[in-house]
Amino acid sequence: MNEHFSIGETAKLNNISIQTLRYYDKLGIFKPDYTDPNNGYRYYHISQFFYLDIIKYLKSIQTPLDEIKQIILNNPQEMRAFLEEQETTIENEVKKLEDAKCLLEKRKRQLNEQLEICEKERGEVYFRSIKEEGILKMTTQSLNPLTGRPGLYVRKLANVLEEKGCIIDNRYGFIYSLKSYDDSNITYEYIYTSVSEESLNIEEPMIFDTIPSGDYVCIAFDWSANNKDYYHYYKILYNYIISNEIQTDGKVYEISLPINYSSLNEENFLTELRVKRINQ
Image 1 (spheres, rainbow, N blue to C red):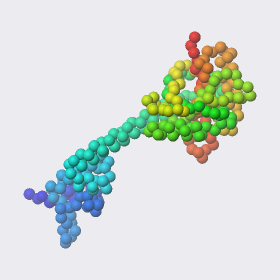
Image 2 (tube, one colour):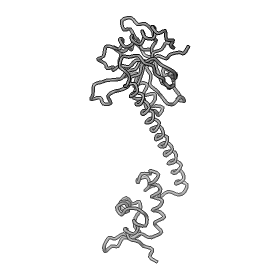
Image 3 (tube, rainbow, N blue to C red):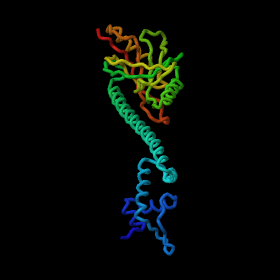
Image 4 (cartoon, rainbow, N blue to C red):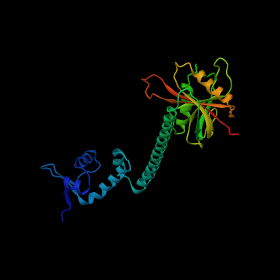
């Protein structure tokens, strides 16, 4: 019975390419049993196929070739320790993929919500049902719609979430009191971004909170750094609430949704002001 096989036969029997076998030989990971000195042909013994299966297995669990070269020299105890370590690595990667899937689904829901808002008439008051949303918020100082730049606050929120292994939302919002403001004197009390995990170990000055579910009276408008009409739209919403004697929780939730996704384009957001209606 023939126990030696050419490189082509070995490749076919083991579902692997000839190029890969040559590369493994070059790296010293898997070498032929002997090479014909006259023509350079490689021949593999059938007993070697077992070791090739080990290499294929290690590669299937995302082990780099340079590590495989060292691992196959280990004893069973060292191999077990490596596999346990690799198991932890794979579990972490699975968790990252699960988080990425959750984030993708969240982004899709947000885009659906954004498209729903886009269909509303700009500057017209409307009612909308909103689900409860977990948020990470922090207090702001002297920040208002006309002069404040939220960039540093957003970065602080992002840094906290990234330290916890989370990714910041691509939208942010503000919270402030619903009342009559003179001379556009609106001052934000909190900046926030939505989060999915309530169990995060958050420390001051960050606060985990929720935007409650319910019916909200809202107004939407296009907003940019050059837009000076924010107070105009706020007054429309405020006057509507007062004139219709709508009971609220006394808070304004502002959310900004990006229209552009590239820094090469002009900064532009679709902004919605929301006030929760309390049913009497």
